View: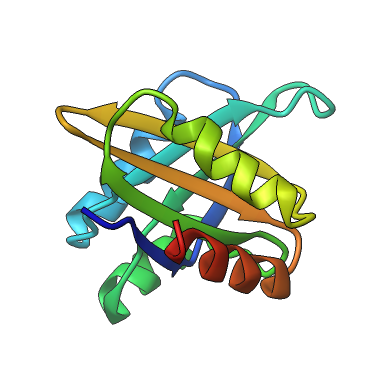
Length: 140
């Protein structure tokens, strides 16, 4: 099975570092019919009492409206590529090595394997780097 490679828009929102705040944001998206595939939330170490949440995908007018009402915005500074394929030993090394050999520096990477497949989201600093990464990854 070839790798499935595509661009994804990442949405980001600030969080107050209090119990239930992440749940409130995610519930608002769910009520609008948003089916998230990826969620990453963390504290902001440089801003005590705050955090940040990244999500994807958000589609449709109702989903986008709900996201904006909850303080989410589509980030313009993070350019993400989604990769899906069969899980086997060394896939992460294979992907990152191919990108590194072509001079691409990663801004961030998140990966998980479920069952027989893996999904990876890789962030780049520029749209050009994300486009180059997609060409490289489609060739694997």
